[in-house]
Length: 353
Length: 282
Image (tube, rainbow over all chains, first blue to last red; front, side, top):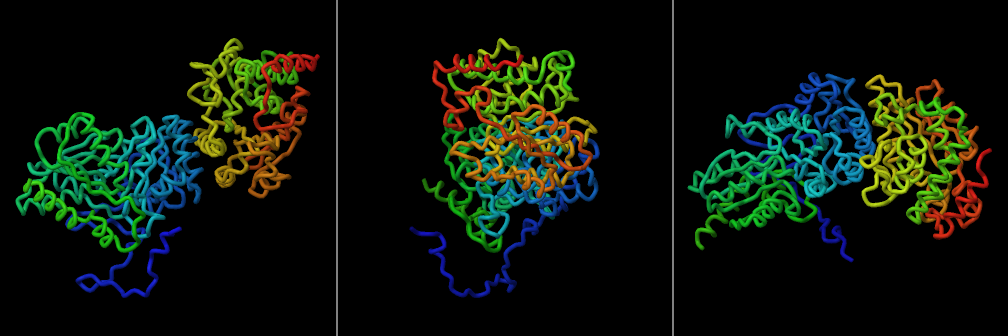
């Protein structure tokens, strides 16, 4: 038997330093996602939910002892009568949300993505999804957004929930996606699982496309380009856009199709985008390569007779390392730098053919 | 008192319980199987709930003012169908469709199939948590209805039961009444040889509940316990642990080596109905 822990070397390490001499510390759980060059919005989910709750008396929020870390604290502070502290008990968090929705309310149940997808799954499946109840499950720390290691890295949440009938699944890119998503998912008469970026969240998409607005179930082209079609979800659209700008300077023209709703997938827009030219198609997701956007896009292409040159940028099928997020994003190929160099390499290989 | 029993005051609870047992045996005969041991055991509790404690409208199972009755134990569906038939929520004639294709009465209880079935049970340890949310919701609406959750002693082993139990106390859910069918039998043997304990009530009291333990096959005791649970003024949730006997009312099945899933041979259903007939209330 080989335990994963046996492969580790427990020798004393040196303090790692970045080029500018700063220490590379593990990003704290409360840290916001690093995104250079973008304005940020503080706690977009919490403020959007309060705004909606003031208009709709059916909205309630539930926390499993993570209101500060899911931005639900904004509701707790401003509308305490709409807030339920469920304690560190994710099973009853989901069951109680089911019960509240049965009585006509629209509960937003919040926790970390790992706990919703792993610990509370049966309760989401049977109490919520099987009955198609309008519970909105909104979860922080999606994919690789913390350096705390596998206990907090929800790298397979999308795969888990994609298998669940009735579930609508969203991976928002930025603060604007999150703020516009909240009223749309509340209006949707069924269960929703949404990933969440919290804290100071960058505003990205409208900087690239000023008239962009999140639409539930819709994929939207953020920028055009004739060499590569990047199909991306979540904050990987931010990476795709930043990489596209860098690649343009090197003469590689990249289109970016943002797919915030993973289920139901906007097949029509994706297929049209793929079929419209002979571009290299690259999917990008902050998620394991198993069961996420890449596999979903490849399936709809193949079953519809499209066979584009196809590559995937996703997290590997592994339990990921602990450490500083920038280091980890480089290590697993989802930083702007790695996305840029990888894309350039694939384009050059393709041109040689 | 339910609307239906107001109309039919001449029918005793003993007769209701007997009718529930008869309905269950008739359904068991249709399929040649079913969780008949549980249905016979819990029949008195169901009779007291539906013909004494609960408010509901037979013609409108979704009436907003109804007391909510959750069947956490989906495999007890045969027992709940039996009482829903007795309560005129399901027609008696439909009994013969039990467990068949296109039936509104599948072998395991699901909300989307059956009028009067509030939740989809069966994945055990779910009912009490959903009951917590419904009780919260009723309070938000200033609706004075109660939420009843019927669970089994086997479900006492699910951690989610205790998450919900703590939550109910934390949120002062005095509109929540949990009913535990304590027949000391689960799939692999005695519940008390697994995670259930005697006296189980002490555990609930320690969690902050108002707990009663009564003989679940003694109707006057069952009625009294339900009354006390409803009338308690304390701001705490209430639990009644009903000690029941599997297969109650059909002696030769009672005496059989008791199993979670009682085997009844094809020729024994008729015999069971005959034995039940002998014990029909006068």
